[in-house]
Length: 315
Image 1 (cartoon, helix red, strand yellow):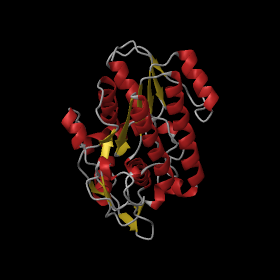
Image 2 (tube, rainbow, N blue to C red):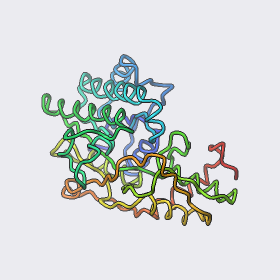
Image 3 (cartoon, helix red, strand yellow):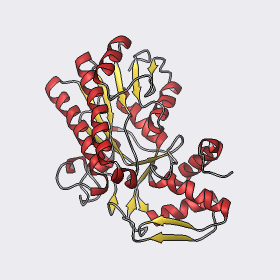
């Protein structure tokens, strides 16, 4: 991949997109293109097509999506389904119409069935029912995966989908109403430490989850950018998981909270286990580098440095 190629990173200000931008910039790529949602509404098909044509985009990395945890998925099912489909369809079809040869689509491990065998293999896609608490987002992402596969099959273009496990890291979303479990825990433990209070968490703490530091995800995207991957779908993860209870204890230790943890078993646990089979990416030569406690420490440090942007945090 020539360093001068015009690469558009959709969602470049988000946690994943900004990490990809930083890594590519550090590697010497000099033609990175980004647009904020105010500058370019990705739900507007005509606007996306005009943008591609005017900028002569050569590569697209799609890290744009409407995302959130169990609560947000449950409260806004239509938006999670429709807006994500609008965004990715406009980006994917616009790229095809513009003759763009390389497209990297980022999805989520929630595309796999709720009770699929563990670890999750790429072959398990569409073999059983989805987890109800995030099926709207999952269906949208599945449609994006299949769109890229169809283009690859019909037009022989290098369109590939990368499915990360649960991501976390700097520039994460710490809003307790819309955030995922790890950043939400960081904020809860931090505020509880400041106020000398116990922490109440959803569920039983028994589900198993896998977590990948966002910079490692960005490195996987660069790997896909610089190599032509032979298949259309690849899992991205660590190949290791832990219970939510153990995650909470790890975060509690990093933050320095010493109070009680109270588990509200009346709240849903979600999928019992989601461990990714990452053997295909390992076989090609990519592996993660950041261990969980190190990644949590980096994330908490960033959280503290940017505390003024989190209005409810009392520093």
